[in-house]
Image (cartoon, rainbow over all chains, first blue to last red; front, top):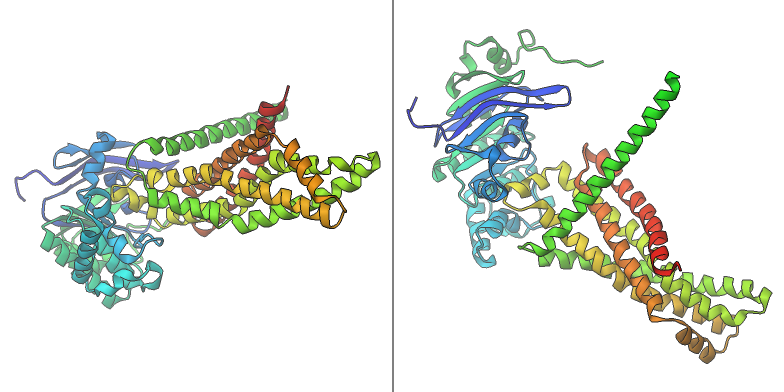
Length: 258
Length: 261
């Protein structure tokens, strides 16, 4: 491990919704210019973790630092400046259906970088090309795109402003294996080209190994394992092994409610 | 004794819930309006909201106003004839339309058409993470989604009510002259001589308040919707019902303020 301070440092992060404890003291470091993949079962708190880092959900306790700055105690102006450095790919794309594709892609540029419409449109076409879409797609509406194309547009929107941190929430959910691999390769390509630090959450093992340099697993609100992404299938941790191999029997018990 | 305490506790919980909801809506509205004077302001979105409320609601409001004026003339003519007071038909129509029916009916029509659409659009944006996406793209969702709609409602409904007032009076005039045999010149003279500026202005002030209420309820319920399609459906219903009830309640309060002596 490098001696450099981590790009993202999370300590003792806790979040509960009513009686349901989702995050129960998460500790996680993400080194600069690396990709961290966080895996875990459905409802294990992966998305909540990302939303806490983005400031979309306020945690109950703990600290989150980006480049040594405590993001939980920033004023609104500082928080907006910090968010301008982050790109986010949402699970279902979250494209604005009232805007054409090019305006979706250029939204961040128009909102915070104060570029004019012509420049924004050119940049949108450039980024669309990087994710394998023709410039003519920019004139379509999100509802006219297939699921895979929507994911590509969402990826283009996330990277359009050249952020130095990228978050990916279940980037391959709902896609066929081939399109999933295409999206993963685009993600790796974008992260390398921008030199960004990336955090992806997924329960797709193939995707996790393709995207990640390192991986961590959340179980019962805690990080139970962390290591190289290449070791995911052979971690030696019985929780991770049960999850990655999809075994019915093991320490992970599905919660059933009557 | 325990049953009595349970009943009191239930009433207390309901009251506290109502207070919490009222406070939450008030804070939401104040925050939305505060962005009017805090740049950036999204003019394009304001114009879109203004057109949605003001222009695209015109046909339904116009039809409602015309038919209401017609019915009012017919009903008042038959009612007033019992007292040999048919000459008051023009006065009754213009007063009812400008003070009450113009703003109230326009408000209710817009609540059904625009309030529901606002709640459905914002609710869908909430449950599909589009509102979170706005935040991650350094855009304040209140400023971007709520403020233009609140301002659109506040400014567009008075203009709609001006049209509704004119068409409502016209509807009454058509029935009075074509069906009831009133002299057209006398009817118009009676109308113009009787109506006062404050009758029209009070109606327009009511319209501004109703427009704000419709937009506020649509935005509040949509913005805070939860739970997928069912949540969006509930938000839409709540937006229309709450806006309609508030229009009628505020109509009484404003009438009391303007006209109670």
